[in-house]
Amino acid sequence: MSILCGGAPVAPRPQEPGAPVNRAEVPIATLQEIVCGHGTPTYAYDLQRIRTQVDRLRESLPQQVELFYSLKANPSLGLCGFLADCGLGADVASAAELVTAHEAGFDPQRLLVTGPDRSSALLAELRSVPEAILSIDSLSELQQLAGLGLPHRALLRLRPDFPCQAVCTAGPDSRFGLLFDELEHCREHIGPSGIRVIGFHVFAGSQVLDAAAVIQHLRGALDESLRAAEVLGLAPEVIDLGGGFGVPYAPGEPELDLHPIGEALHDIVERTPRSRIFMELGRYFVAQAGWYLTSVLALQRQAGRKAIVVDGGTHQRGDMCGIGLRHKATPVSLADRPGPVSPTDVLGCLSHPGDVLAEAYPLPPLAPGDIVAFPNAGAYGLCASPWSFNGHPIAAEVVFDGKQIETVRSRPPIRAVLEGQVRLRPMESLTANRSVTH
Image 1: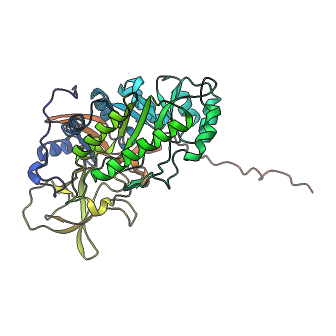
Image 2: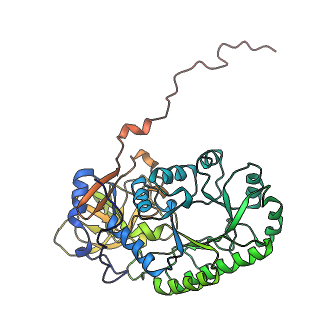
Image 3: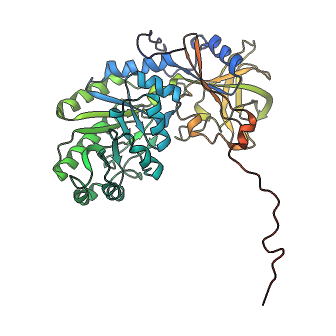
């Protein structure tokens, strides 16, 4: 089955953004069909919802703003290929992500390599994509790269010198980026004998739901970039303003209002007519498209409440960004089982007391074998989780587009856990037959 980005109808916008999941809005029949064909736990991604997010951004932001998909949010090859077909660039932060982006079909001219990883594996892969743009994270990194003779263009990543209002912050106290007073020391490594620096990169943090806070980050990033350009006597060809657009996870959280952000970006574009403006977004594209599907294994009690144990867990749906998923999750029962809802904990299958997927969320009566689906699971799920803990197989991944379903990652067999490992054979002690002399 071939699933393309363009030309399909856009999914309707939820009537009440941030409200509890309305059962009528859940693609129950499709999710049930996915479970029948793939079992659980399985991640399922709604491509129509991804189209909606791409279209919203393109309708709200100036067309001059170039959008990049950050693979760290979800590097599934199937999703990456779809987002490449949508015309996005790719933001990668490792050799594996670079290989994935290349295989997915992202335009090499629109590859942005960020993050502090400059391992030999990444450097080797970089030589196959000389068109990629590097984001340089430190003075030490600049010094090392200048001596390698790489042909790549580069951005200097600046540590934000303005307040950050993100949930997952990369602001003034973070580890990322050059300090402003280090810029003078960059001069000797920039130019014909060093690295060709074409601009600046500032990223303040992620999961920002307040439009005013996003605008503050964008304007702060621009001002800092322009001040850095003055210090270095550089006319920036590119200014990467970061991203960090948030999505609602809990009932009552608002959708991010893109209209004022679009107006602010129009002003930024007018201020920088000779610069390309980049924005790197991950969560905003894929989070709300994802469903994490699990099966009830047993009934339990937890903290005096009803609880269910499912075959998934935090080893496949971690909370790397610290957004409090267990308190914000809104699981949905796919079983049409009558009965009043009551506060219920959803416990994972791990031998770990912290393996809690949802806490005191109102659910109807459930029985072993019932399916529980977690919405908003498309970002920082499987890829950001300790999925090998307890030796459970990695979850299957599928995409769906209306009633069309396609597998993008098959669940490996149990014995796949042994691949690449070697059992030690009994060996004689190195000292067993050795004569000891004094």
